[in-house]
Length: 546
Image 1: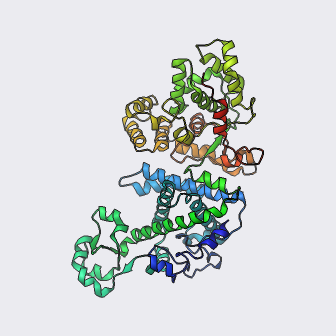
Image 2: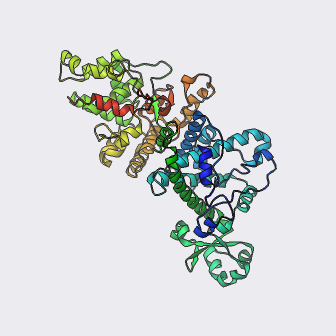
Image 3: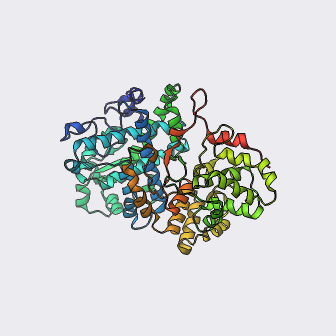
C-alpha cells in the first residue's frame, strides 16, 4: 500500500525543488533532498524534523501497519489533551512533562546529538516508524478531504508535534533542516538587504529592533493570510498584503508551510484512496483510525478480581465507578427499572468490572423492584445471559467505550456521557459527589465539558479524585510493558490525561490491570470473513424495551 501511495505522490509538488506544479500553485512544500549526514544509514531520515515529503516504500505486516498508526495516534491525542489542560507561564514545561512518558512509550525519537549513545540502528527504526505512522494516518484522515473535521483535527495535531520537536531540537539541527528546504516553493520570499531600507523604520518599531538588528537579521515576506495568529496579536508588520517576518520567527513560517503541505497532501491522498477499495485488510483499519480515538475492548481484570452483587452499591458511591455509570446506577435505584440502552450499557460495564454471570442475575433481579422473580426470568434473564455470550450468537461482548457513549446512536442524558448531555448545574452537582479537589477542580471540569472536551474533563475529575493518578497508573502498569511474550497481556496501560473507557476509570480506582486490546484485532467476523459491528448487532437483536 505504501509503495502504491508513493507512486501516486511521485508527481506531487512536494518531491522536487524544480517542480513546475509547485511553482505555479504556490503550495507550501519541501524538497525531498536532504543535507549530507554523518551516518550513511540515516540518509533517508537525516533529521528528527521532517515535512514527510515522500511516502516511504516499506514492506509491512498488518500488525506493524496497525501498530505504527495507533502509537502515533496516541501521541497526537496526548498532544491535544496537553494543550487543553495546560496554559499560562509554565505551559511549555508542563506539556513537556506530560508528554515525555507517552512519547517514550509510543513514539520515541532520538536527536542526532545522541546517536552515538543509543546507536544508529535504533534511530533508524525510530524514524522509520515515525515516517510510516505519519503516512498511514494521512491516509486514514484523508477520506473526506482536507475540509473534513477529521482531516483538520489531524493537521492541527501534526503541526503541534512538529512544533514540539522543533523546540527540543538542537539549534544546529534546526539550521540544517531549514537549509534543506527550498524557500522558492514555500510561498515565502527573502527580503534582499538592499530592500530593507524601505521598511527599516516600521521593522524597528514593530519588533523593537536596533539598526544593527535589522542589518543582522534575515527577513522574509509571506501573505499575511498565512500568519493570522501573528496578525491577531498585532505582532507582525504588514505592507501591501505581505507580512514581514524575521528568522527569529522561523517556527511560524515553518508551521504555516507545513500546514499547507499537509492540506495539499491530504487532498492527494483522498484521490488515491479509491485504489484501496478492494483491500479488506487495510480499509477497516483506516476507517477505525479516522474516528480520532483508540478504541479499546476491556475484559475482566487479569488479576482475577471479581465483585459480588452486594458490592455494586458501595462501588457506585465511593468513586470507583465513573460519573456515567453512577448516573445510570442512581436511575436504577430510583426507578427500580432501566430502559434497554441503560440495561445494555450498565450490564456490560459491570461485566467488565468483574461481576460474574450468576452475580449479575442476582443483581438485576433484586434491582428490578417492580416485578417478581418469575417475571424477571421470563423478561430479562435472557438478556443478561446474552451479554455474557451464553445466548443468541454466543459472542463475548465488550463494554462500551467513552466514544460510544458520546457519539453512539440513541445516547442521551439517561445513559450517555454526562459531560456531554448534562447542563452545567446538573453536571456540577454530579461532580461534587466525588470530592475531587474542591471548587477549583470542579470549575475546571465543568469548563472543559462546556468546551466539548468531554474525555479530558472526565480525566481531570479522575485525577482530582485519585490524586496523582497518572503516576500511580504509570507505576502500576509499567511492569506489563516487558511481558510481550504473553499475548493476553496486550498493550501497556498508560495514563494519557483523558478517560477513554468507563472500565478504565474503574480499574484505575480499584488498582487492577485490565487487558487492553485494539478492537480491530479482536472484532468478530461473519461467514464471509468481514468484520461486523458488535455494538450495532447487539443493540438490534436485543432492542426490546419492556
